[in-house]
Image (cartoon, rainbow, N blue to C red):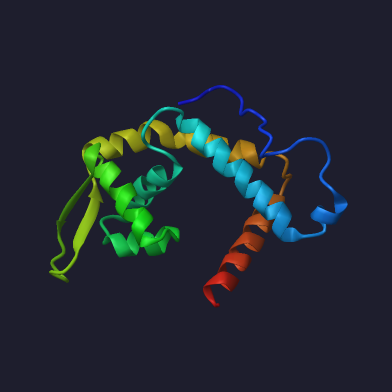
Length: 159
């Protein structure tokens, strides 16, 4: 995985953002999300596994087998995108599918031993990167920030 510092691209930030733009919470969340996405994508470099794939591996490693629809719901990823993500992980032999005993119309997707090894090799470094991105928070600030993010996401779910 990439050990180089994240490049500051034009799409991320240059100089001081306009106070007019900064008056919108959405602008700040959008720019932060853009930075996080670019940082996570750079973490995997040329590896075919990217942040989306890694998050699928994480959910399956921690929560067990699921249908593709359950994975979509768990990660808020649309079905069309999920088909590609799962197929890429199947091709890498990081996932496997089997018949769903509860619903013959669907399959259960689970992580393989190879996928588990990949996940375990990278999880600590990925989590460290996540912590580094938010290293400016002190004390209970991160807990409060996560609480606000959860509240905003819950609001999205209620719409």
